[in-house]
Length: 391
Image (tube, rainbow, N blue to C red; front, top):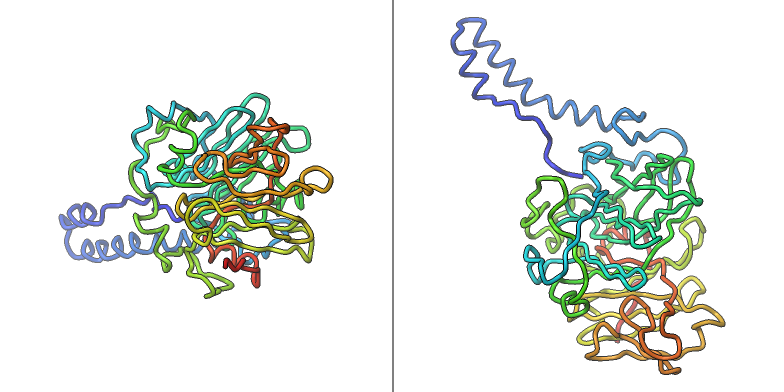
């Protein structure tokens, strides 16, 4: 996705070799220079017209998104390699992540793991497993969207890979069991045998390394032992990519100036994108202010609690289930991280929605179809979506 190409022809070496010849040799030099200049352009133009699977991830067949907007991002299928054998170490042993760099965390059962952006920027997908639960961290650096999907689909455990295709700057993943293509921000398969199937999600927390260390100092963190040689200490797309509102690789189909392009917002999809009238609403992370702020809202006919913090730089959302958690009254908890909520029954809930104290200890609030990403991407995917107005 925007990575540099692999063309390494040295024009000056060609010139030195050809200068030994005269007359027609000079013309050959000019021809070589022209070919060196045009070759990457011709290959790029050819890739834009792909309509088969020869590049890995062709755009043939039925799609739920406009085929004309499906782009070849450049590297090709698996050109950005997923991590299929992740390696972890205790947080106390991790030294490569600066305080202000971002991480995506998951909690499955009692196990908590963090995946730094410095790994995800280069690999985009990590296929992982905790106990009997197989899942994939699916991250798109161009849209700033990270989420966790169940890898068990129709009773079969699959791996997800990077298709090499993009839709509105966003990752299209594919599953290696059926070769179906999945739109990350639509949370569904948009092409192939699983077309129209929704991705099953697990709650994630995306925040800074500084906050994560305060949340879960005993967690395990993905190391730089990936089996690939990458500059994990640097920035894949440049040091200011996450904050430069003009740094967007491909054109925006639906620009929306209500917020600045790279504003981080937590969005809720109030149902399945397969529904024609699904409601979408976003909550700017910075709007939550200092400490922990709780918002109760209704999106798409469903009730949600959204908790976040501008100072801690995160937001999470949970769906309240009728007859189970809808009757509970919640309030924010300050200065007890990872606990962020307590309810009218006396339960305390952590940032992943697990009850860690009280009569419901061990239960988990329902994961919302929600994730954090750049404003421009949310607005491009879902034109006219709502923005929550903080008081």
